[in-house]
Length: 317
Image (cartoon, rainbow, N blue to C red; front, side, top):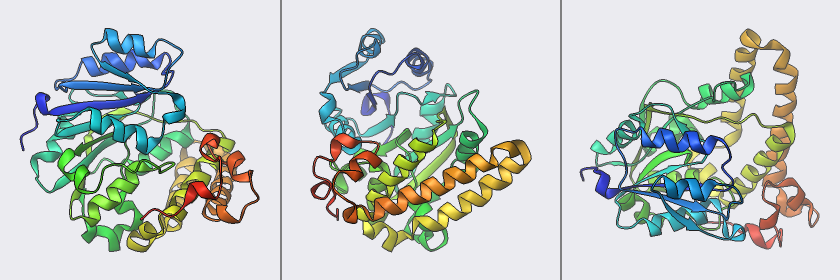
């Protein structure tokens, strides 16, 4: 199917997007390809986020903060953007770096076998060396199209995809049941894994660029990886089909040490501390069912989702 503005929607969840939101809106306005629908799903921001979105001509859907979920909110966007056939997802802090970024991303669908595509994430200007390495490691300059045939070689990296800047075919997404409403994190990786198992391909388009990076604190790193560990415990079939995350983690650490040794050696102790915290967070996440009640709530980025620690994390098939 031919991609046109009329059959394309851009969906972005927001909550108090802050000063970068104006830059985000301006970058969207400069695009050579403008989606026919731009839908902002806002969790009752207390700043100017929804007002600025409406002034820019975007549609704004307001939801209670208690109803936000990474999978749930994006699936709501899928449903509210019908009948658009191609769906671009972004986050409020991912600023388009090129005026043809949408066009470059959507060109991936020239192949009818591609069910999803994602772009290259560059560090925000002024980002630290640790955050900059993470972007360079996960978003190289080489384009790629991946299928299940690549799993023996790439392992869990086969299904890597980020909804901070990605596009999906509605046909492909609906074929796998859409985004899982209950997953705590990694709704993109979960859907991408299902997509590959269903016979679709995933395209990486480095020519479609956004600025997106985070200078996380050690505590934030621990909590992020705790939730990732929970995710893999919920979805053991991903590791069975694609391989364990630990192998990719080891490759990342070796790359990070080499990178920092040349450009910021004074950060190596901090990076090693973070590595230990990530590993501990991940292992505790995988083993969360054996933790004392209430402890998981304190370790997670999303304590509100842990009303019943053990009931909230049943396995997802």
